[in-house]
Length: 472
Image 1 (cartoon, one colour):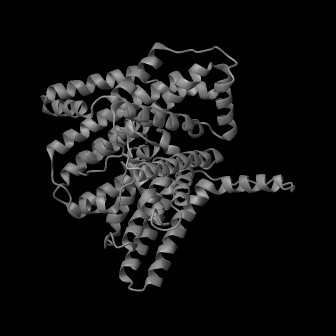
Image 2 (cartoon, rainbow, N blue to C red; image 1 turned 30 degrees about the vertical axis):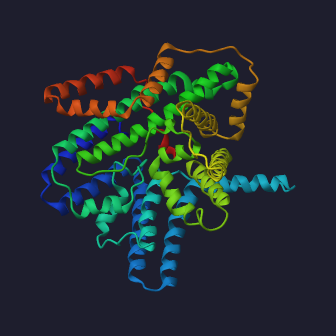
Image 3 (cartoon, one colour; image 1 turned 90 degrees about the horizontal axis):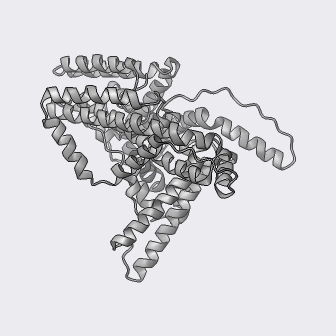
């Protein structure tokens, strides 16, 4: 059930209506939302609802056992069981064939003829997101930062909540569970804010991400040898904005739908292409995912206080790369970002030792830093977009060894890309004021704006492509 489908709008209308009717009946309201969330997930593949339930059950039981025990050994065993079960399931569905292929290649390299059979495994949609979301609960209880809930129903709703179950944001229990314990009251302002977020999300997805994909990105990556280096470079930049508009658009819709139902979710993006370094980029990009790796992996293996900080950074960023996909291109993607983050950390230390500011201070230095950081982010995403290392190498080769002067730019493709860049770098306050103005407008004007926008998006959008992060 895609967010862009008529099925979803009918589903949301029913859920919204029932949620309003049950505002004074907390248990019935949560039961309805849980049933709706499982129905939403089962519309993608009903067989994997059991997997969602299993992940919820394992972490619910482990969380209660960890809190109930005063023995450090017992607590560690329950945590290990939750990690093994959750990450084991994730590894099986997402990485088993990658491991088999890599083992076969290694055996062939050392002289053995290996033709290892691959498993016929279908990746459950959203598995990376709901696995991390449920695990964060158990890890927080183990660290003493969260109390175990007595209600399996509430925890199952936290894990399966339909706006977030497919592509996040990865919500922490301490952000969401208190809202279930004390369900928010009816709030007209929150619903208006939710509607604005939904509208913004659909604009990002349909008017920007889908158009950039069709006009620039997909042709370039389908046959890079047929196009000029200029076209290929612009397509790389276009992909960076396609990816941002696609994922942040999904997040806006998810947050907007949650607000319509009375819940608040965290912001997931903070103008990432305004980052002055690769380190700063990861503080602004997909914040719920990057903060998960920071809090539970980087700090867990020692951070900057225990062990070698650079090794810890490399481990973290390779894990971030692999989380995005099972392939050596994603491993290299993580290595590149880890290398730049390590270099930036070393450079900041050198500057601080000399009594210099670790960050650029002048406007010119800041603009140069933003430009350079974006180049690293955008060019490394060739590895992200290409299906494998060989395809990525072929794309880079076509950029460096021009074999064609073909540059089929379209007015729509370039116009949408330039508008995306302009909107990204405009002051954030402009959009806040526009949202406030919409919320203050008469209902008739608000409705007219929605209808006009829907018609415009239907005319501009090249089709209902899936959100990119569904594959992760």
